[in-house]
Length: 249
Image 1: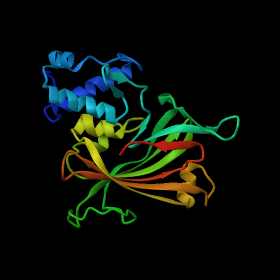
Image 2: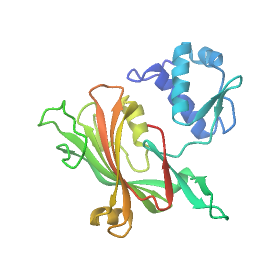
Image 3: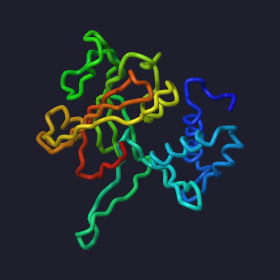
Image 4: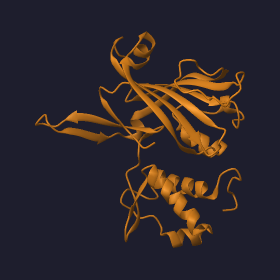
Protein backbone atom coordinates (compact mmCIF):
# COMPACT_ATOMS: atom_id res chain seq x y z
CA UNK A 1 0.00 0.00 0.00
CA UNK A 2 2.87 2.37 -0.80
CA UNK A 3 0.61 4.76 -2.74
CA UNK A 4 -1.70 5.41 0.20
CA UNK A 5 -2.32 9.15 0.76
CA UNK A 6 -0.75 10.16 4.08
CA UNK A 7 -3.82 12.08 5.20
CA UNK A 8 -6.14 9.03 5.02
CA UNK A 9 -5.97 6.39 7.78
CA UNK A 10 -5.12 2.86 6.65
CA UNK A 11 -8.57 1.48 7.44
CA UNK A 12 -10.15 4.29 5.45
CA UNK A 13 -7.93 3.63 2.46
CA UNK A 14 -8.76 -0.09 2.50
CA UNK A 15 -12.44 0.76 2.86
CA UNK A 16 -12.22 2.95 -0.23
CA UNK A 17 -10.50 0.21 -2.26
CA UNK A 18 -13.13 -2.38 -1.34
CA UNK A 19 -15.99 0.08 -1.83
CA UNK A 20 -14.78 0.96 -5.32
CA UNK A 21 -14.42 -2.76 -6.16
CA UNK A 22 -18.07 -3.26 -5.15
CA UNK A 23 -19.24 -0.25 -7.18
CA UNK A 24 -17.29 -1.40 -10.27
CA UNK A 25 -18.74 -4.90 -9.99
CA UNK A 26 -15.54 -6.71 -9.07
CA UNK A 27 -17.64 -8.01 -6.17
CA UNK A 28 -21.34 -8.37 -6.93
CA UNK A 29 -24.36 -8.69 -4.63
CA UNK A 30 -24.18 -12.10 -2.95
CA UNK A 31 -20.42 -12.49 -3.40
CA UNK A 32 -18.11 -13.02 -0.45
CA UNK A 33 -15.30 -10.55 0.13
CA UNK A 34 -11.86 -12.10 0.72
CA UNK A 35 -11.44 -13.32 4.29
CA UNK A 36 -9.78 -11.15 6.92
CA UNK A 37 -6.63 -13.28 6.76
CA UNK A 38 -6.45 -12.93 2.96
CA UNK A 39 -6.92 -9.15 3.21
CA UNK A 40 -4.18 -9.02 5.86
CA UNK A 41 -1.75 -10.80 3.56
CA UNK A 42 -2.78 -8.88 0.45
CA UNK A 43 -2.57 -5.39 1.97
CA UNK A 44 -0.09 -6.03 4.80
CA UNK A 45 -2.41 -4.54 7.40
CA UNK A 46 -3.23 -5.53 10.95
CA UNK A 47 -6.39 -7.42 11.85
CA UNK A 48 -7.88 -4.44 13.77
CA UNK A 49 -7.37 -2.26 10.68
CA UNK A 50 -9.07 -4.84 8.45
CA UNK A 51 -12.00 -5.13 10.84
CA UNK A 52 -12.37 -1.35 11.08
CA UNK A 53 -12.60 -1.09 7.28
CA UNK A 54 -15.15 -3.92 7.10
CA UNK A 55 -17.16 -2.37 9.92
CA UNK A 56 -17.44 0.86 7.93
CA UNK A 57 -18.64 -1.09 4.89
CA UNK A 58 -21.29 -2.69 7.08
CA UNK A 59 -22.40 0.67 8.48
CA UNK A 60 -22.86 2.11 5.00
CA UNK A 61 -24.76 -0.91 3.70
CA UNK A 62 -22.21 -2.32 1.23
CA UNK A 63 -21.78 -5.65 3.02
CA UNK A 64 -23.31 -7.67 5.83
CA UNK A 65 -21.52 -10.03 8.18
CA UNK A 66 -22.73 -13.63 8.32
CA UNK A 67 -21.48 -15.88 11.10
CA UNK A 68 -19.55 -18.76 9.61
CA UNK A 69 -19.49 -17.33 6.07
CA UNK A 70 -17.83 -13.93 6.20
CA UNK A 71 -18.57 -10.60 4.53
CA UNK A 72 -21.41 -10.83 1.99
CA UNK A 73 -21.78 -8.05 -0.59
CA UNK A 74 -25.19 -6.38 -0.70
CA UNK A 75 -26.92 -4.45 -3.47
CA UNK A 76 -25.22 -1.07 -3.83
CA UNK A 77 -26.92 1.45 -1.53
CA UNK A 78 -28.23 4.55 -3.28
CA UNK A 79 -26.97 7.15 -0.87
CA UNK A 80 -28.04 10.75 -0.47
CA UNK A 81 -25.72 11.97 2.25
CA UNK A 82 -26.98 10.25 5.37
CA UNK A 83 -30.30 9.52 3.67
CA UNK A 84 -31.27 7.04 0.99
CA UNK A 85 -34.35 6.84 -1.19
CA UNK A 86 -36.78 4.13 -2.17
CA UNK A 87 -39.93 4.45 -4.20
CA UNK A 88 -43.06 3.56 -2.32
CA UNK A 89 -46.43 2.35 -3.48
CA UNK A 90 -49.35 0.29 -2.29
CA UNK A 91 -49.82 -3.34 -3.28
CA UNK A 92 -52.86 -4.63 -5.11
CA UNK A 93 -54.79 -5.29 -1.92
CA UNK A 94 -54.18 -1.61 -0.95
CA UNK A 95 -52.99 -2.66 2.47
CA UNK A 96 -49.32 -3.40 2.11
CA UNK A 97 -46.72 -0.71 1.46
CA UNK A 98 -44.15 -1.71 -1.13
CA UNK A 99 -40.62 -0.27 -1.28
CA UNK A 100 -38.45 -0.65 -4.36
CA UNK A 101 -34.77 0.10 -4.87
CA UNK A 102 -33.82 2.97 -7.16
CA UNK A 103 -31.22 2.69 -9.88
CA UNK A 104 -28.17 4.96 -9.32
CA UNK A 105 -28.51 6.31 -12.86
CA UNK A 106 -31.85 7.89 -11.96
CA UNK A 107 -30.41 10.15 -9.26
CA UNK A 108 -28.82 13.46 -10.28
CA UNK A 109 -27.30 16.32 -8.31
CA UNK A 110 -27.38 19.87 -9.62
CA UNK A 111 -25.41 22.68 -7.99
CA UNK A 112 -27.64 25.75 -7.78
CA UNK A 113 -25.12 27.98 -6.02
CA UNK A 114 -21.40 27.26 -6.20
CA UNK A 115 -19.39 27.42 -2.94
CA UNK A 116 -18.94 30.96 -1.65
CA UNK A 117 -17.76 32.43 1.65
CA UNK A 118 -20.52 33.50 4.02
CA UNK A 119 -21.29 34.05 7.71
CA UNK A 120 -23.09 31.25 9.53
CA UNK A 121 -26.77 31.35 8.41
CA UNK A 122 -29.16 32.68 11.04
CA UNK A 123 -32.01 30.37 10.06
CA UNK A 124 -30.22 27.23 11.31
CA UNK A 125 -31.27 25.72 14.62
CA UNK A 126 -27.74 24.50 15.27
CA UNK A 127 -25.00 26.98 16.00
CA UNK A 128 -21.22 26.42 16.30
CA UNK A 129 -20.79 27.99 19.73
CA UNK A 130 -17.02 27.42 19.81
CA UNK A 131 -16.43 29.56 16.72
CA UNK A 132 -15.41 33.20 16.73
CA UNK A 133 -18.16 35.63 15.60
CA UNK A 134 -16.14 36.65 12.55
CA UNK A 135 -15.60 33.03 11.37
CA UNK A 136 -16.54 32.39 7.74
CA UNK A 137 -17.99 29.32 6.06
CA UNK A 138 -18.40 27.86 2.62
CA UNK A 139 -22.06 27.85 1.63
CA UNK A 140 -23.62 26.16 -1.40
CA UNK A 141 -27.07 25.08 -2.58
CA UNK A 142 -27.83 21.89 -4.45
CA UNK A 143 -30.88 20.08 -5.80
CA UNK A 144 -31.12 16.29 -5.93
CA UNK A 145 -33.60 14.71 -8.30
CA UNK A 146 -34.86 11.25 -9.18
CA UNK A 147 -35.72 10.72 -12.84
CA UNK A 148 -35.88 14.54 -13.22
CA UNK A 149 -38.29 14.92 -10.27
CA UNK A 150 -36.78 17.20 -7.57
CA UNK A 151 -36.70 15.46 -4.19
CA UNK A 152 -34.11 17.26 -2.01
CA UNK A 153 -33.28 20.95 -1.90
CA UNK A 154 -30.26 21.34 0.36
CA UNK A 155 -28.04 24.07 1.75
CA UNK A 156 -24.59 22.96 2.91
CA UNK A 157 -22.46 25.01 5.30
CA UNK A 158 -18.82 24.05 5.93
CA UNK A 159 -16.08 25.69 8.02
CA UNK A 160 -13.49 27.56 5.99
CA UNK A 161 -10.62 25.24 6.98
CA UNK A 162 -9.01 22.03 5.70
CA UNK A 163 -10.59 22.65 2.27
CA UNK A 164 -7.97 24.06 -0.10
CA UNK A 165 -9.35 24.82 -3.57
CA UNK A 166 -12.79 23.71 -2.47
CA UNK A 167 -14.70 26.09 -4.82
CA UNK A 168 -12.87 24.49 -7.76
CA UNK A 169 -13.98 20.93 -7.00
CA UNK A 170 -16.48 19.18 -9.25
CA UNK A 171 -19.70 18.84 -7.25
CA UNK A 172 -22.31 18.07 -9.91
CA UNK A 173 -23.50 14.43 -9.77
CA UNK A 174 -20.93 13.60 -7.11
CA UNK A 175 -21.23 12.19 -3.60
CA UNK A 176 -20.35 14.99 -1.21
CA UNK A 177 -19.25 12.61 1.55
CA UNK A 178 -16.98 10.80 -0.90
CA UNK A 179 -15.38 14.10 -1.95
CA UNK A 180 -14.61 15.05 1.65
CA UNK A 181 -13.24 11.59 2.36
CA UNK A 182 -11.07 11.05 -0.71
CA UNK A 183 -9.89 14.63 -1.34
CA UNK A 184 -9.57 16.03 2.16
CA UNK A 185 -9.37 13.02 4.49
CA UNK A 186 -12.52 14.14 6.35
CA UNK A 187 -14.53 11.10 7.44
CA UNK A 188 -18.10 11.43 8.74
CA UNK A 189 -18.37 9.90 12.22
CA UNK A 190 -21.93 10.84 13.25
CA UNK A 191 -23.86 13.89 14.30
CA UNK A 192 -27.24 15.19 15.33
CA UNK A 193 -30.38 15.99 13.40
CA UNK A 194 -33.60 17.91 13.91
CA UNK A 195 -36.72 17.15 11.88
CA UNK A 196 -39.80 19.26 11.31
CA UNK A 197 -42.83 19.03 9.01
CA UNK A 198 -43.91 22.34 7.49
CA UNK A 199 -45.65 23.98 4.56
CA UNK A 200 -43.46 24.88 1.61
CA UNK A 201 -42.89 28.60 1.12
CA UNK A 202 -42.55 30.10 -2.36
CA UNK A 203 -38.80 29.35 -2.70
CA UNK A 204 -39.00 25.75 -1.49
CA UNK A 205 -42.12 25.11 -3.58
CA UNK A 206 -40.37 26.41 -6.70
CA UNK A 207 -37.26 24.29 -6.15
CA UNK A 208 -39.20 21.10 -5.37
CA UNK A 209 -41.87 21.79 -8.02
CA UNK A 210 -44.79 21.55 -5.60
CA UNK A 211 -47.61 23.92 -4.81
CA UNK A 212 -46.89 26.59 -2.16
CA UNK A 213 -48.23 25.36 1.14
CA UNK A 214 -47.61 21.69 0.28
CA UNK A 215 -46.24 19.59 3.15
CA UNK A 216 -42.47 19.09 3.06
CA UNK A 217 -39.91 17.73 5.47
CA UNK A 218 -37.32 20.07 6.97
CA UNK A 219 -34.25 18.11 8.06
CA UNK A 220 -31.35 19.97 9.66
CA UNK A 221 -28.12 18.15 10.51
CA UNK A 222 -24.85 18.83 12.27
CA UNK A 223 -22.43 16.33 10.78
CA UNK A 224 -19.29 15.50 12.75
CA UNK A 225 -16.03 14.24 11.25
CA UNK A 226 -12.78 12.65 12.34
CA UNK A 227 -11.42 16.17 13.00
CA UNK A 228 -12.79 17.51 16.28
CA UNK A 229 -12.82 21.10 14.99
CA UNK A 230 -14.59 20.32 11.72
CA UNK A 231 -18.33 19.76 11.80
CA UNK A 232 -20.46 20.89 8.89
CA UNK A 233 -24.17 21.53 8.51
CA UNK A 234 -26.99 20.64 6.19
CA UNK A 235 -30.40 22.27 5.87
CA UNK A 236 -32.50 20.02 3.69
CA UNK A 237 -36.08 20.24 2.44
CA UNK A 238 -37.63 17.08 1.01
CA UNK A 239 -40.84 16.11 -0.70
CA UNK A 240 -41.95 12.66 0.38
CA UNK A 241 -45.10 12.17 -1.69
CA UNK A 242 -43.38 9.67 -3.99
CA UNK A 243 -40.39 8.43 -2.01
CA UNK A 244 -39.43 6.93 1.33
CA UNK A 245 -36.41 8.31 3.17
CA UNK A 246 -34.21 5.92 5.05
CA UNK A 247 -30.67 5.74 6.36
CA UNK A 248 -28.24 5.36 9.23
CA UNK A 249 -26.83 8.30 11.15
